[in-house]
Length: 258
Ligand SMILES: Nc1ncnc2c1ncn2[C@@H]1O[C@H](COP(=O)(O)OP(=O)(O)OP(=O)(O)O)[C@@H](O)[C@H]1O
Image (cartoon, rainbow, N blue to C red):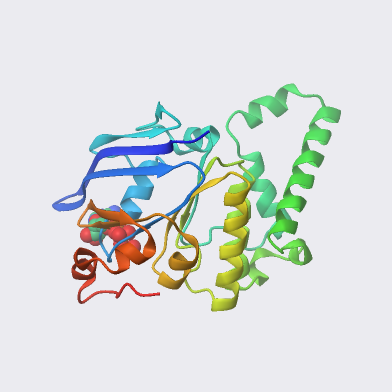
């Protein structure tokens, strides 16, 4: 299927006197790895939080696969296939990588009700299927070797991969990643880009907020720039990096260059 998977229209959100979103329009096309960039305070995180149901917008709409999901609870949005991973790796440190992955897989809406109705044998089969899924996801993210290690023992980059793995357990159609390579070394950052490109090649759509412009340049197309709570422009990385409006928005902040 082609066309858009996510359509945000007129999204507005204030925090007291601060206008974080001032009428954001945003369209994510199916099968793309789309970047949302912009200077600090542009409203990117607020946009992600409104889209994923963590906070409610004051006005505006979020449509996912044609359905109006504005104001839905986060777990319902996840269940519909819009899955978000967090900027701060949220895994439970003392649990193993496998357990962390399973935790997310089992937290699906309706799951607890479903398992209550399944007999013990069926429940066991379901758990084994989830374990298999977790192992497969860990394998594709190069986490197989550390599957039984506590999450606390992972490197920063491996924690980022585990977070992506946790999101994949929920079978996303649209995967939203908040700064997937913040604090990650360049080698692992390139590896994470490769994993995300593979997901896209298999048909997943990905929306990323990231400040590391070399990562954005290597992976994301299109790049949507926002400033002061509004969309500023959209294009290839090269187009936006060379646009005077974008350079001005970043002036005195973070430079846009690969
Ligand atoms: N919970 C909150 N309470 C008060 N103000 C907030 C809150 N969250 C965000 N803001 C303000 O809203 C504006 C947009 O913030 P937001 O975090 O969405 O921007 P951002 O583009 O994600 O920035 P960064 O790149 O620094 O993460 C900022 O002025 C910020 O201070």
